[in-house]
Length: 233
Image (cartoon, rainbow, N blue to C red):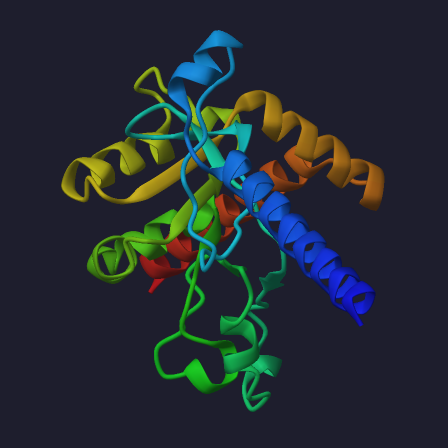
């Protein structure tokens, strides 16, 4: 009988020792010991309570630069929801499912108000073409004041995004962050844009730069024809 009790006590002590060992390991990984860590030249880590939901560290993306601070974008996504601008989203009723994603991406000036049941309410990142920037600026309070937690990534050809005062779109964005200093607006670097152009050409066999130039040329021709028609009337 004494032998059985002794064995049970040994098991209980072993269990407690194992639990304490795991607890110590957990604390060492999460508590800041500045003196000890400085001795080994390691940066301190921050205390994280057990109830804290683990989040992965942010990744730095050097191809996207903040218009106001000139710092690169820091972002890391786990489960992404890329929401289409298509009218087929109407009636899908997937808004709640979209809002549960860790990163929610939307395009250009795609609306959410009035369509929350189908497309969700939240927007973490909005990817905007240089041609759609004027559409955002028609309602700046909605995009840059009311929804100021959204990250805006603006892409376009270098001639429109240059910072020497000759970039039309960049100048617009610069004025926007002066009015809305909390707006998180990023632009693609020339190197990143060239990389994206290469991917586009590889996937489609078409040159996105020439395509953009053709579209602009066609618009100019259409505007010229409209002017001629107006004058003739």
